[in-house]
Image 1 (spheres, rainbow, N blue to C red):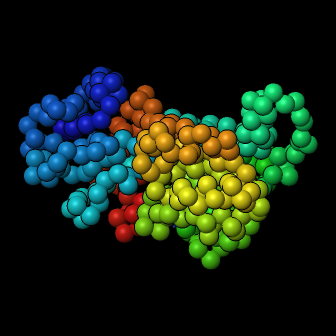
Image 2: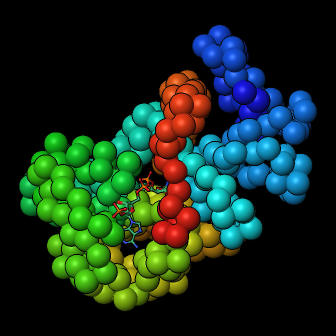
Image 3: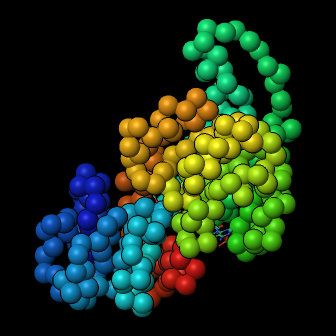
Amino acid sequence: MQILYKSDPQRGALWQQWLAQHAPDIQLHLWPETGNPHEIEMLIAWQPPENMMETFPGLKALLSVGAGADQFDLSALPPDLPVVRMIEPGLTQGMVEYVTFAVLGLHRDMPRYLQQQRDARWQAHSVRPAAARRVGVMGLGELGQASLRQLVSLGFDCAGWSRTPREIEGATCFHGADRLGAFLARSDILVCLLPLTAETRGLLNHDLFRQLPAGAALVQAGRGAQLHHNDLLAALDSGQLSAAVIDVTDPEPLPSTHPFWRHPAIWLTPHIASQTQADSAAAALLENLRRYQRGEPMKGLIDRARGY
Ligand code: NDP
Ligand code: OXD
């Protein structure tokens, strides 16, 4: 089988070597080298090349190198072309670490203590136990579930919110737009791990923030276009929110004059919450290619109607 990779060249070279060793029947071409374009069955990319279907008429699936597929213009792709996102343990573990870091940092008041350090002020505030901190995770997919389980194990009072019903031991699960308000009302720290869809675009806005307990904090590791920047700034200024850890923005990067860079209550990271890990992802990729070869559905298939 001939497949084409178009993304970070270092990871590509590693995958090429790994596949040559573990699956010599699969040949990975590294863009811009494509071999015979008519023989390419799979394209693995963050951004596909222009005229993809004309150039690779035998394409059977488009695979994202990341956990999201919202970077693809799905409406421009043939409706029957399977689109597959990345599910691999290294990416999941990275997100668990980031969410845990952010929730613990907020729980232990670190934005306030960092400001106090800058002001050379030695002042203790009362320490709240994890069991008295209500954490809510929006999105209970691969990343949300794993993150929530970790937070449960740390003793937080946890809840999750998804589109359809989910069950996670130790956490209260809510689903659907009707239950969003009840979920928000018990989220002292709100973590967003939602995919970007028509329904989640702009969801983190004034209307949502006002439904959180006063002084709540936000962790945004979903997608930039879900967050309304001015509404976040207004919520921080009014005290409705106390702090925010933001990993994704729209646009990325933010212009150097953007207030998020210097806001004392915002921790901003450059879309590093998690990344596909070349070694663990190579095995996950091969497993998916084998599924395809056996005629089984690949893991991470995007439901084009739902948008994720
Ligand atoms: P999944 O597709 O596995 O899970 C998505 C979850 O979101 C599901 O639980 C789904 O509900 C829920 N959901 C989707 N739409 C709605 C809605 N309208 N209302 C309520 N819940 C909804 O995705 P992953 O967990 O793998 O990834 C989540 C996102 O994390 C990615 O799409 C990407 O945006 C982001 N990400 C960010 C990274 C970073 O570095 N910042 C790295 C990797 C991913 P249901 O369970 O009912 O289907
Ligand atoms: C991803 C990402 O989707 O990096 O993997 O955000």
